[in-house]
Length: 284
Image 1 (spheres, rainbow, N blue to C red):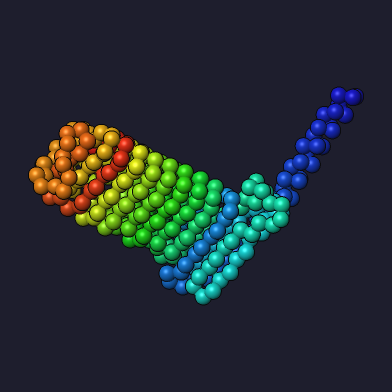
Image 2 (cartoon, one colour):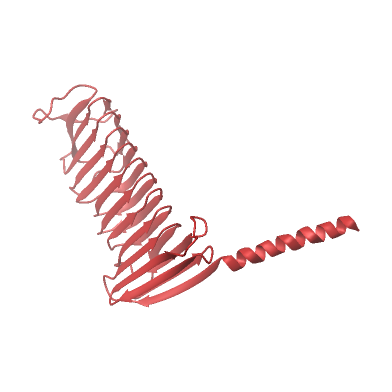
């Protein structure tokens, strides 16, 4: 009998805890009607934000609050929608967390900020700006848009970005670009590793720079670009790729640490630069 009562007591306690958790976590839904080229901004102190396309001129925001220590402020001014997590006194990172899921018109420009993230945007053709400290970033299937990413230590992944103006700034997080092309693709990192897999297409300018991180570029045999690759204290390896040498450069070409060459018709310009990291180019 005592054992049975103990089981009942434990079960009741667990049920009570589940009820408390259910009460503490709540969901809010918001809808806004906007016109073409709307501007959507979300500022979230703690927690993920994900954005995908909607149909028509609708902005749909689903916010899951993890406690009653945070509120969601929302405002619409014409074609501009602002969402902001409002921390109440006593809020912590755990109690102040909000999970945001957004659906926006594909042509909308979005600005997302979260310290912890992750941040995710997909299948859009409006400008995308993502900012965070430790937030991981995942952006894919974007076309004809500016993509700006600024983080401290979060991992950054971009994939299937076409005809884009891409600018990435990171302090220590790794940056990975797969099938990213456009008129301008620029990555700056202090110590993070930069990897690029694609054909450097679009007749654009590509600048991949890391102070102490390694840089790796994997390209297909038929790619068309000219490249300068330099590492002051590290090494440069062009693997099994066949480049036509460039005889006239503004720097001294030193085997193993600096070289310049051309593949195909050199439609794009590629600059790979690091102070103490290693640079490796290889064939896909």
